[in-house]
Image 1 (tube, rainbow, N blue to C red):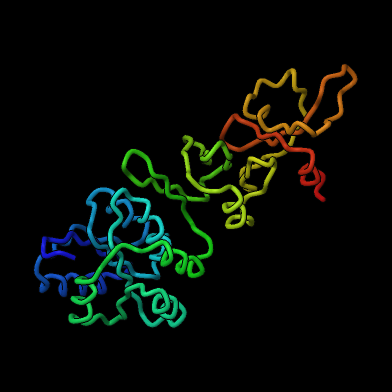
Image 2: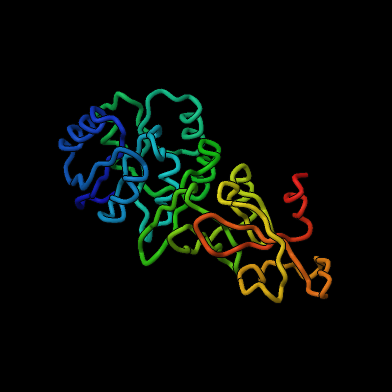
Length: 268
């Protein structure tokens, strides 16, 4: 880091720990503490507002921990350097040491903090990969939108739909665009979402039930897009092709169920 004034954001759920860092940082020249957060989600919002150069992140925090927050921070236009703080955690410390990720062991000493500040840098892709096992499943998705990072709780997501190189993230309020792989999302959140179609994962908690519909009477263009070409759905007595759709909580759209996934409707 240079000798220019550095903007620092502190994130720790314990007030005494935040106070300790604040006191130590005031004795280091060229440091401006721009904000303090009590959890990772709050830290991300403050990072959007203040664009810090360095974020001091406690590993264990409620709502969103420091490991996940660090991953989301890397989507910022100018990602800050990250220094983790932790009480003794041999598993995390081993991962940090192997990947040369800087961390401060509590109680934090002035000399160690000063050294960490002087050599702070943004996380490398290989270091982000090393963090993944420490937090196997995110609680939030981070969306880059108009120069800001928007945080969407996974519990608010109704479905994830693959479209070209983006994923449409649908909540009750709106849609977001996410640059990730649907396959990767399925691997990470397989206990929360089920695949009803090759291009769509639906949150089990938001499925109200299933209904069989005629194609010609169904004006839901979204559902029409999720009928596979080779489903061979049987026709009704009038010759109209019929298909199953999932009825969803809080939104009017439905998602069609492909033939290979109809075992989910039968419960088998």
